[in-house]
Image (cartoon, rainbow, N blue to C red; front, side, top):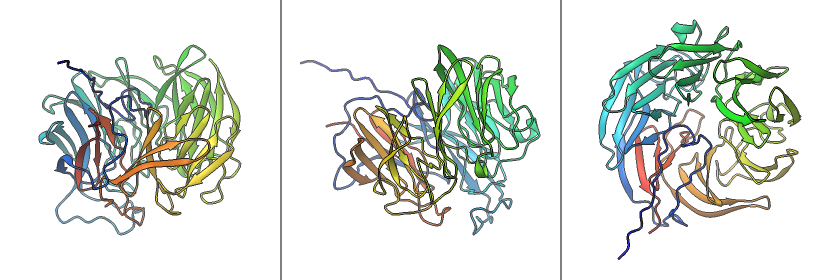
Length: 430
């Protein structure tokens, strides 16, 4: 008798272990069950867009608890104050039982006020979280004890962005790098152990929402900070600006949201109104290769993504456009090859959405309708292999029921949440 030991990976931060949206575990099912999933566990949860993080047999997620008697506004764009709290919840990975939770008072003034946006980051016995109103917390992963805390609005004398603080923090050595905002403090590096500021950089009228990312270009580690006025490269150690490319005019409505993507010496960016941008990056400069010509939400070219991080493979870009058109583009030129509504909203719908994660030679897509989909994304066509309902869409902020929270893939399982619960389903091959 022989025993085969199979390694299980964690998903400890936004887009996974390497922050690249690739699920590298093997031994995953070829097709999803036709008669519905069997859930390992289901645990009640409050509202929120925050995706789960999975590390060391624990699951971390944030949610929102509305104060008794308070009501959500009828208009999701309203910024009226809503009393309530934010929570960081830690669950046992094996059974979904809540091990600890940390809750703090947090009146909301944000548009789309269902809950926090940012995925927790777990590392070295700590978990780092960022709330919609700028509460940055470092907690002990063992019991939720507060190690240190900061508040962006107070510390940097800034206002909460329209859609809240949404950029997922980046851990680099001893530095926790965040997007804050204001005069000279769009990007800020904190000491991960003490919360003390190490450096701050860049000025902009609004910070946007795109996560900070570190890529290597021309043999040099570069911290990419993309805000509505410019895309910038910083020295991660000092915050010194290496190069900047200004957007003229600024990105409409401040919607720099999707994660920047690197392919070799190329940097790809995409946003809702202004479309896509491709740069060739050197050690001290970035040269534009192409960009969308149309600034529009309906009459689009290229890829006008709202919030999903596109998948880029073998010279092709795959991702949802402004009204749910899931598209394939040539990376080098931006030429559109095909589109389909199948993995997003099923039909044209403003901000139609699906999260995309690569797994081997196929993709796992989590539709805004709550469906998990296995598909092959190829330059020739979209080929759907399998689909099954994972969660009920229960967030009605965009005027229709959606699930807009990125799932985690770890331990050959998927962990996903809506505004009522967080679930875990095994995707291990039999």
